[in-house]
Length: 355
Ligand code: ADP
Image (cartoon, rainbow, N blue to C red; front, top):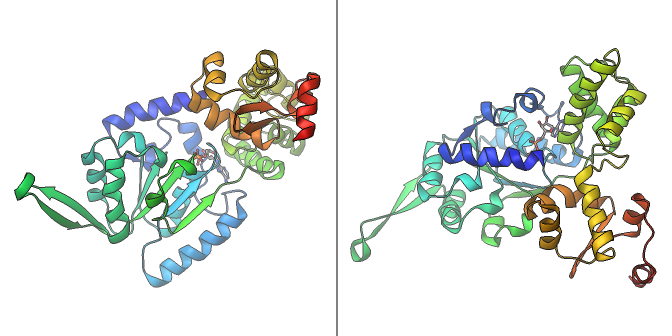
């Protein structure tokens, strides 16, 4: 899937340069970057988060102190990186962006920490993938703004405490459960980003269309929003795909019919599921009588990696109630069978009734 291939690019590039500056945040993806909201007003939805942040930011400004460390979690494309950028611009400070897989060696994380200036924000994406050494360097840095460095060897070794400027760490993760508790406990604020409603996503669609100078009706925006799996990144991609279609086949304007027709051609159904999602559900139904079946088996049969399935496909299928997670693996829900127009095997039906 596209998101994962982006990640592979990020990792390669980040290995060469652990700090990816905000200007190149989308790793050459100028489209995403050009439409990324920069302030609270253009950051749509997540109202509880924005309310809390407004208060925290104002209090920090009044006290003249840096912000508490923050952790944002939730599926990809919901706006974790974007909100970190909004926070930085509202505070008028620089943000340095990196991702955990690029902080392999101690000197990577030490280098970044030492390059920070007072009040600056360090954003670490996929923070659940930090290795133990990097985590242990982060503990005193987050808590006391110091780096504990060891010099010399064995008996003559000395620990040196190097002061760091007071910075704010913003971590983002798709898997909060995989963070070690000492690391999780060092964040002053932990917030889960929610999937967006159709109304919110249609605002995202209209905003993006405005920036790209695309003519769209309210009904056209709603049609795209309904198939965007609750995710702004997907909504934005669909606006672009549908707009290409509208330019080639129509007069360039997106209305409800143009949106629906192009999304049908793109094989994105009314739930927003694409071919991979449908293949996943069909596989469990056809080969495993609806499940339960282990994630590794599913990934191998689909020739996808486990991470793509867990991070990209599953969260929405679970939230839409099409898939269920059980201790013995994944199974397709009655709603999932219905969505694909399949009949549930009778044993499965009674099994679900017992649930
Ligand atoms: P994450 O870091 O959670 O994977 P991003 O912050 O990179 O997601 O967001 C992906 C894209 O979706 C961004 O380019 C941005 O344009 C758009 N986006 C995310 N959140 C919002 C929002 N609340 N309002 C408008 N656009 C958003």
